[in-house]
Length: 172
Image 1 (spheres, rainbow, N blue to C red):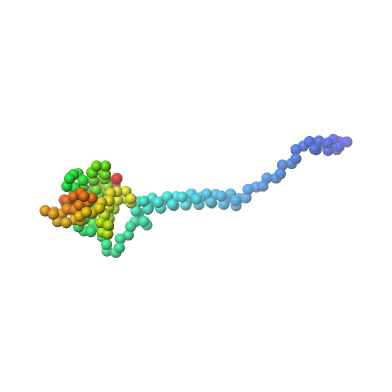
Image 2 (cartoon, rainbow, N blue to C red):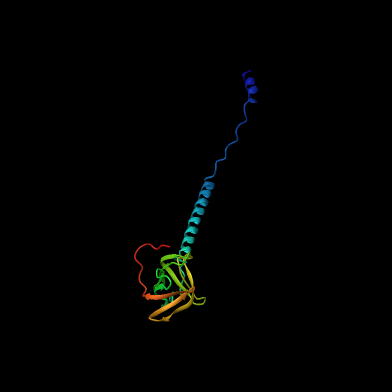
């Protein structure tokens, strides 16, 4: 009789819970490796973007063998005739500095890359894409006691040789 009583309670008990499938360790390892790969790819991509933006290796512009970044006649320190505070210094190594005061186009750069495009007659002093460019209306030519050039309609006179910038941080 006792057996019959247990049989009677059997149908009131909840059904057995299905067995849980264990998550495969290979599946967990695959997800972790995939996430790690995405993070590393993001960091690598971000690093390459920063290097390209700053014109650092391997994205640094290459000059043809024996070519100078700027012609020799541009090398030196130039001062604007209309505002003596405005100066452009171009060094033979292709680096330069500028302190330009001209309305809303004020620039102060130290150690930026200087390039001259003789086809379009543009002189630029930039950190990657940041910095001024000028159209060379008149390239450097003798005038009076020295040399002068005209950039975007503004006359600059050569006041001396190119000098090294003072030690410190480069800033924009």
